[in-house]
Length: 143
Image 1 (tube, rainbow, N blue to C red):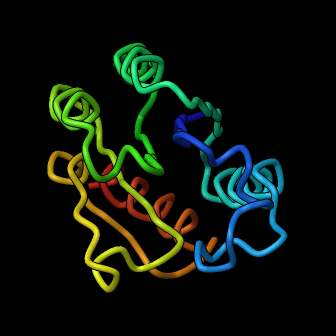
Image 2: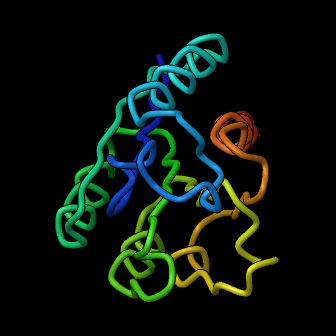
């Protein structure tokens, strides 16, 4: 079975406790992971999940993904605005990657640094961004 790695950045382990403007409501990280896992399995993918508040650990996990996963879905959280380390690592991987955000970061004017080296960026569709990320990975893998 093909595999997808879902990565969540800093503070996303507390998503159900953040301000409503983040678009999460009462949804917990575990609920999002299970929501995406169920969809990924219907699409023929196994889903692994990793969350860290530490940029270097995310870089390490991305590097370890090479040769193990068929695609990566990443929500860098606050690393979105400045992480050149995550951007460079995404650009060094030979597998498709999709950066996702629950809210439309382009509408809020926030830049994405990692997204510059991702295969694509999906934003503004709430938790369904992750499902669209699975679809994007599936499209890339099946080409």
